[in-house]
Amino acid sequence: METIPSILQQRLSAAVGDSSGVPLHVTPASDSRFGDYQTNAAMQMAKQRKANPRALAQEILEKIDVADLCSSVEIAGAGFLNFHLRPEWVQQRLESLRADGRLGVPAPERARTIVVDFSSPNVAKPMHVGHIRSTILGDSLARIAEFLGHRVIRDNHIGDWGTQFGMLLLGWKTILDAAALERDALSEMERIYKDVSARCREDAAVLEAAKQELVRLQAGDAENLGLWREMIRLSQSQFDTIYGRLGIRFDFTLGESFYNERLKPVVDELRTLQIARESDGAICVFSDGAVAAEQDPFLIKDKDGWRDNPALVLKSDGAANYTTTDLATLQYRLETWAPDEIMYVTDGRQQLHFRQFFAVFARWKREAAAKVRLAHVWFGSILGEDGKPFKTRSGETIRLADLLDEAVERSFNQVSERNPALSEEERREIARVIGLGAVKYADLLPHRQGDYVFSWDRMLSFQGNTAPYLQNAYVRIRSIFRKLAEAGEVWAGGAPLALEQPTEVALGKKLLQFGEVLPLALEEHRPNLLANYLYELANTFHAFYEACPVLKSGGAQRAARLELCEVSARLLKTGLGLLGIEVPERM
Ligand code: ARG
Image (cartoon, rainbow, N blue to C red; front, side, top):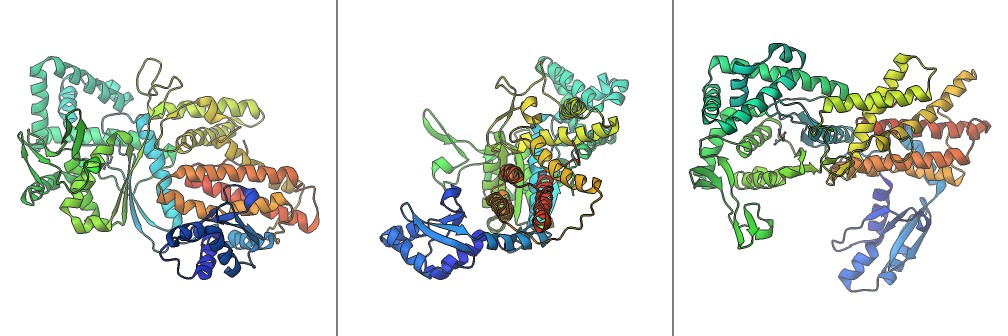
């Protein structure tokens, strides 16, 4: 189905003829009193032609043919055109939407292949809240892209290689507590890692021993390789438990170690092509002066002015690093999947890394780089209510598993208070859906590049822009149909719509915006646009429901209103599903 802005754009373009390259944007009206959609095309064109914008708007107004879909078009302000939709036309579009398996979301002009690199925790370390945002955001973006009709490849780039394994191996061989490992493998691995790394800082002999373990691992020593694999296996099984709880899946889990063989050739090629060179024993990429200093990731400004800030691809000890691995990974992905886009969902603190890595890649593979969109989808931090990084009371980082447990537990208490009559099993299931939904929604709702304050009370509240509020909107609609069934009425569905009351028309218009919001959320990598849309939809539904009796009305009107309820519930459920959030049938 086409979206309303795209239909209006075509009509506009037919009226304007040659807009000499000025884009004819149609957007939802900023204030519904001034119409439903608006365009500033006349103002944009007037600027270019040095003409009077209102006169140009008048000219367009006289030519534009929108009588079938608009009840009126008027000029406002400096030369805006405001479009008011005809309720009959809205109704007709909504008829198409509810028959459409895509709920009015247009098919993309061309289906793209999109790799989403997300979650990507590190082996032998528990997943902490820092990984939660990557996991939740990446999952939602993958779902949205898939729903839109793209080919999506979910790749978990776990950190399973690096210097930490020297310490882990030494700790494993000397201080491992087998019973503790059995109970909680990640905690025990974390403990031995912390213990050894603390001792490494004090004792050069320990540091040397850890280095030797690492050298043996890298040389392919059978024992060390075996232990390393065991650490990966144990970590992966705990990650999988969390992914299972969160309803998250991956198509591939190709950790950093998968690229080991490809690292050296990358460094060699960069040297041969004179993109990288030796400096202080390391191999580095420096600025090539191609862009202004402000935009150059290989320069940094300090009090004496601009100085070099090279990207290392080989450290002076001969080891490759994060940048080298990302270059090799990108090369592999391009060869293997030929993606149109790759999204890297990580913390904002990795911005410099990604800017450098993308820039090195563009110098290395100019043609390939021109064909793929590389996006660093970065996000801010989660803060505690004191405004400081979110930690436990004793100052430890919070584990994702504990956080999810607490969410479900708190929600269970709420559910039990509200519905003491439900069986414990039912209350547990509802609590699971609400608790996990609340955590996900709280993470997806804020603009991802900002920090947000983690607040149990806020995220679990039934009031305001929260998951429970949206889930409750769905449940309330479902309860209408339950009442119907309880009264012995068989509801077959499929009656014609009849948008008569203003709140009904408003709801129809809101439902039709789903197809406008979703492509934008993907394009800008912002699931929060979808979250906010769903919130507006729920509010628009409530306004309708307050003003228009459904079960107490009669005849064709009642049947039509039930249809409006049905499609609203379906869209809410689908939309929340794209945020990775389930809905309960009651709560
Ligand atoms: N393992 C990394 C971390 O925990 C994230 C990896 C992100 N993906 C990538 N291709 N660099 O910070």
